[in-house]
Length: 209
Image (cartoon, rainbow, N blue to C red):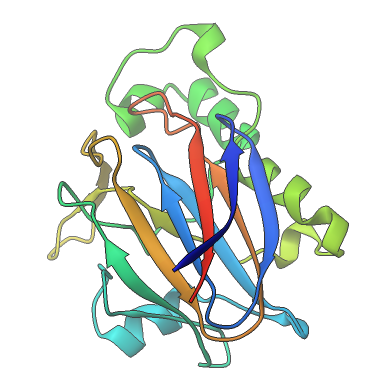
């Protein structure tokens, strides 16, 4: 593959950009990355968690699986996944400043993230705000951003009760996921604050075949 560009996304910030059909985005990260996609010619058509799970008939997707849109169109293919330590999440939405403050007020931060917090450690924003800002230049309102594909967010899920728990299982340094565009796309991601492990920056490389 021919390398087209490299992008560095600092901790707890977002990025958005365009991909041409057959181009590949490589997302290199050791913490959670909230990823979304939109059809470039019709931004109302967007990635959908539920249709992705149903099409692949599983809740944990990996190399060879498809990311589906809400009209059941095939938007992207996962062509490589070097995260051997855990799975990627298709259950959760996005974190946000409001969610952090509500959990703090209700005394649930430790219940959710399994560690103690100092006041200065609680972010004033999260992936909701990061994606909203990154997509604003494209005219996408925050309420039109779909629930994301949460890369590297390994959740413990009880198959009987449905209970979900955060974990600190994350990929090793240098791990990445490659996603191939199956149509022209607008994509965006957030370098999540990832409170269980305190978050990290994200690096992106875009290739063409």
